[in-house]
Length: 98
Image (cartoon, rainbow, N blue to C red; front, side, top):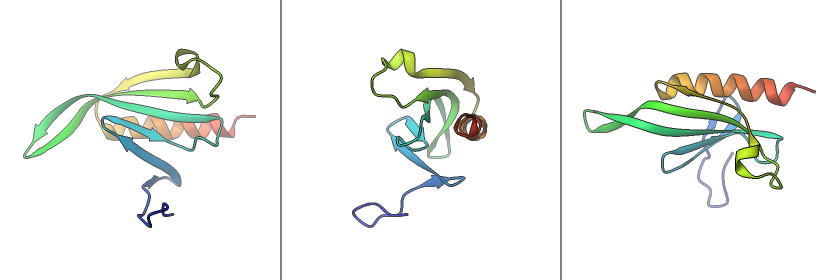
């Protein structure tokens, strides 16, 4: 998949993954749910900042709801890998539930 400028868009397990500063959005706004992950703490490894604490929220995408009412569930994970793992499970389950 590519965007309007022809750049390849990042995906994880077949779903879009977007980054804005220290916030990652996983999923599509066209779906009923999306995951928001916020990196709340980092540490330096060589010359890179590595996430050590990540807040994960499963949110409804309904624009008519207030932001606090959109949150369905939330957790905090140590590291981006653990956060992505729980995010993909939560999103898959939420989108497949009828």
